Structures are given as structure tokens and as C-alpha cells.
Image (tube, rainbow, N blue to C red; front, side, top):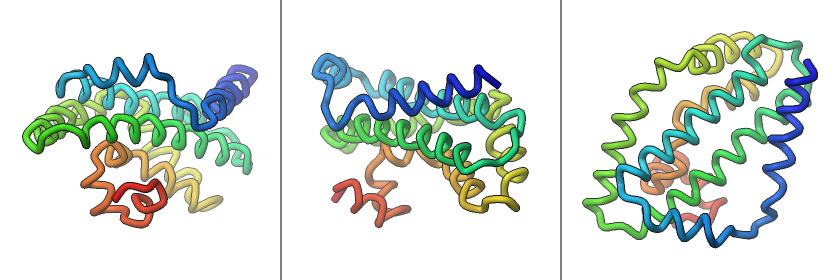
Length: 168
């Protein structure tokens, strides 16, 4: 339980550390990514989100509002990272954007091999659905969260969210 609390605290702390500032070294590194590297980095964030949520929820601890807030913090951090990748991708040619999406799709197919995917996406989601449908919806939304890195998908699938983020 101490490890769970420590992980959740670290996630929240790291999510709040940026305060809207950019890391120029990180930004410069991102601009040099190939489409395949981009897909790999986006997939890594996607899989890491599942892994973090699995540490938080995989053993199905008793529901608390803090549990939901910690899950929201994990999602928010992932959205922040995906949005940065999306900004980089938006500067590419249409062909490179399509290539990067195709490469990401091929990688995402492998998420089913990660046990965290099943525990979070199905077991935890169903477990918490009766107590907090909003948490269940949040867990379900992780499955398509990479749309934040592909702005055309975000605008099509979640136009209000795209608008909130200033993605036009």
C-alpha cells in the first residue's frame, strides 16, 4: 500500500512540475524523430499509461475519490505528452503523418500482450463502474488516448476536447 501511495504521489508531483513551461532539450530531441521513432515514443507513453494505472488499480483497492483523482492525473500527464507529439506531427507532410499513424497502429496492436491492458481496460473498469461510472469511463478512454497525438482524430472524435486544447 505504501508503494501505491508513493507512486500516486510521484505521478501527481511530476504532472504538476511543468507548469506550462517547455523543456527545450526535450523539444529539440522530439523535432528530430523519424515517423517510426515518433510511433515508438507515442506507443511507449500509451503502454506506460496502462502500466501506471495497473499499479494504481490492478489489485482493485477500495474506491476513494483520491483513487479517481490519481487516475485522472495519470491520464492528464499522458495527454500532455501526446499533445506535444501531436504538435510535432502536425508540422509533417500528409504522407509522413499517414506513415506515422500506420506505424503507431501496428505498434498498438501489441498492447493486448501487456497484462495491464486487460486488468485496467476490462477488470478494473468493470469493478469500479457501479461505484463511479466516471472512473469507468476514464479507464475506457485510455484505450483511444493516442488520438491526442493525432490531431485530425482528436478533432473528429472529440471536437470539444480539441477546442479546449486549442487544436483547430
